[in-house]
Length: 289
Image 1 (cartoon, rainbow, N blue to C red):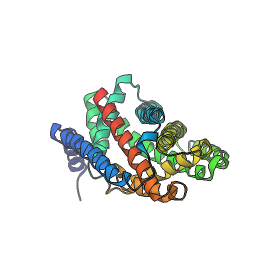
Image 2 (cartoon, one colour):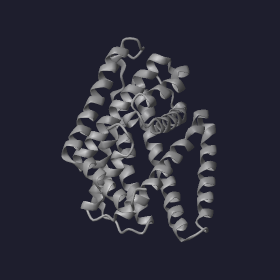
Image 3 (spheres, helix red, strand yellow):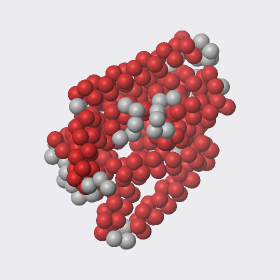
């Protein structure tokens, strides 16, 4: 049986590798490669679509970039909120740890960004125990919030369903808080994070709808449908641990959900442009921190 000391040693070695300069360089190269891949694929599929470059609404695409950047940036500050709920006094600059480690999500496997965050956090004085506790809270709350947007696929009729689901989850997590001291802390952190992630997914969902509206004629009343489609696609990409950053999986799900409204070719163009925008946002966020 592997000893606790051996496991700790392996964990420390993993975090060192995850934040080594060569690994971060590899992550950046893979991120750039992913962007190039998306742009190359976009060029090849553009001719099969009905997207007319002369009719692109560039203002809507700028709005898509801004909304996406707000949603992505919110993730770093939600992590700080989780840490505070877990009893750790936070510093504003710690958000930079989150953004720097996020680059590692483009390395195959799902642990690199979290291992990197643990090592970077330790260098900035963030308690390792708090970081370790924050990861399952963050994963669970973000995935649950994204999944909770699925009823928006019904259109505006899905909005009250999402609100009801949010209240139900908040009540359920609140009841868990009475089962013990540690459960109280984790449940409170999870409840707050879930509600905050719903706001973050709303911003990213609006960004995805603006991306579609900038490329093809998309009516305003379809905004919830696009937000719900993106939430479902993100969860699918998260589950597909073999796909770095959900690359390919997220786009396939978006095409499957939106082909009936846009046609497969146009849906694929929208999904690819959205991926390009979010990849650029990831690069910008990491460079600024």
